[in-house]
Length: 491
Image (cartoon, rainbow, N blue to C red; front, top):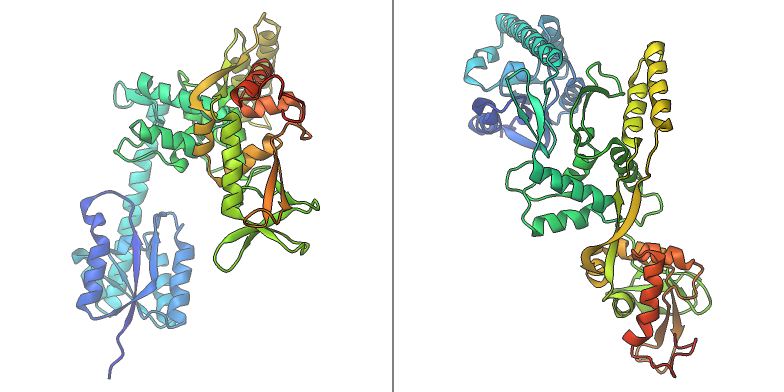
């Protein structure tokens, strides 16, 4: 009985051409036609440049798998897909593959002649790699020259973000705002800075049928919206790190959709959410850090034989059904606040120069730290001049989001509901009660006597303080409490 050869697949696509798009099926057909055994975890897929040598780590993995005997043959679509740095690199790869006890086969019709095992095939392979390397150099030089011309013309270089289109001559295109899309960008910015989550905003945009940034008929997703809100392009700055450094530099300025100050605020909030500073993780339970037992011990989520419960870690001897407790607290939130409008903060720009100052600060950050002292002094003088001009500050106003608090609550996930309860000072206590069917009951402190100021509670609910007190005064009437019943204890 003969042992089938074990094959791995090398897949690297750098263009959208039709022939490259079919390389995976060509490789699979080659493996099947030669009765090789495809090793499931030995597909080496990457989009990094073979010309620049950024595929070295993947090549090391191939050699290691050959040495371990996981594969005996690596099937590549075309020689330029795996090595194009020149003859020396090709001979070095051939040496490493041979020492590892494997071989490489090429399945593209144009390169199958390289599979003949003789000295001339190695020479031909080296010549092909040298040719591919030269073509890549020429192509890169053409691209660099074209980009330099575009920069000199102050034209658009690369893809513009959602909210813009490029208009004008080929190498002198200028960004133009698309009003309908810019309106969506500003709405997303306002709602996110007002406290709504990316998930909530995406769900609403999808429900309203708003085309996504890719304009491909797909849906808005969190990662897409997050990248859009991070993009300095919507603040009127196209940035690039052409020299490969970590600092991105402005290559083009144009009419912004949002201010630079708003861009910096968006990035700061996105960063804080990404690191979950003070924010519930996705796998938290709704009443974690909110519910305690009657002895004051914190209760935590615990999986029993069939369902989750909240239980004390100090072995107080009882737990409460998680579903029942979460449901009771949700009903209490809706009963107390459900009909109130959900309010969000909107920044009404004043007549000031904050955006110009923020942009000049960014210009200073982009200057060469070891030079440009004269330009740095000029920018600082301009900032001081702008600060000296008469100005009217921005104003923060609370406006209805179009939802009730019940609708807002129901749109939150479990971690979002926990954050809401903590922000509003809610405290829940599980008390043993033999008269209750499950042997326990909840007492809920909805923030009335919690260690949280009324102004803070108003803010987290989405109300200015004066509106909060107005709604609070109407609460007894909404709950059906008469003047005679309205004792402090009942309230």
